[in-house]
Length: 53
Image (tube, rainbow, N blue to C red):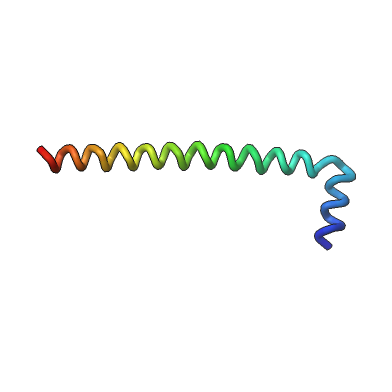
């Protein structure tokens, strides 16, 4: 079943489009997670600074 689906997608060229869509999704997710990590790091840094004062 899975092989047939892949074959049909490849036949219509949709496998490349689907791969591109997944790649864009993962790049966007990576950017969002990086921004979240940076925000958490800044928050921790501010908390450490306030605690040391």
